Length: 521
Image (cartoon, rainbow, N blue to C red):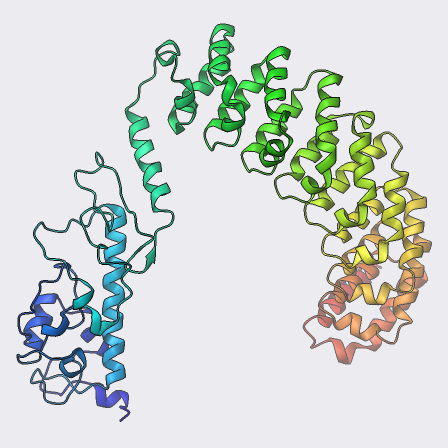
């Protein structure tokens, strides 16, 4: 039987409860007194949680006494429960019970994580046998013992312990990391380092501590040779480990900035001696920063040549990695063309593959910048121009084409326009290609721009361009950059389509731009 909202309202001889009041605004004592519940056979471990009565009471819960199943004794069911509540359908009762239980679980998990939930000693545990009728997803029967659920006795002096993967169905994969961090912060605040000497033999441990590494960085930045040597010697056998450590990597970066050439050599050899380990370091979010710092402080050609020769075999793999591509870009930025020629050769071979990759297109642009500085960019540019149409419609390749146009080399611009000729209409309707067409207007000569505009306005799809989400921006750029007779012809053609544009969400933008241009003509 379905109930209308009017049927769910309490009788007039009772206080004005809303449906929300029934679910949320009752205290546990109030709910118990209204429901006239009999004493459950086992005590709930959640004494302070409202809304749990009738949901976690187990087989011993009854309305007006007696045992029985949860369905038979559900206080939200039946028309003669004697507490002045209207009858609820079984589905509504289940919904109410589920809402209360969900709220209880959230409160329990949150309080446990924050260390505020302090279960009283001696409270019997409600096991799976008590919750069978509720079909609750408990992780295991030990889920509510003292040091589970985030129970922190004498916080912050005890450790957080939780061996389960969930608390009442809530994931706790990060709880160990969170509480470890909190404990480390608490312990770090109590440490009072006064000198490096008192840390002799313990510097590795201190470098891995959040507060300890700050102390070490401060000492390193003082640039006292004896102290730098002390730190270096103790960490020398652990560089590869610390480089990828969330705290240790900062110590290594600071150390690199003050090391002499001999010490830089030691760090360099420790990192590149194992190629697989070097690869792992380069793609690590912490390791990539240390490698970049190391590249910035290489002081002679032998060091640079060694690094490039080691990086060359997996230069393309690194170039396409979200962290690794920064290493290759740093090589392009800080080393000369001659130093980078082997890396540039690898980039040229895989030019199209890199141009269509999110990280690779950044490396390719940096490679173009380095090659152009030495007037040796021909090979890279030729490969990009040959694939200009495909790249223009690519989410990342279009940036590479725009970069070539931005180089403002007339020959390169002319060759790109030749590749795109006949496709400017389709490019104007493309999310990425439209950016390339607009860039052409900005970088081309007046004659070249006129050819593009004539191709667009002579197309039977010109109105489609004016009304398109991307095409309308191309039309606006054409109006702004065109001159003389070409601009007049363009504006007149736009005005002819006025009936189809003035109320169109994109077309009206073109009209507005046209009106502004005409006022200044």
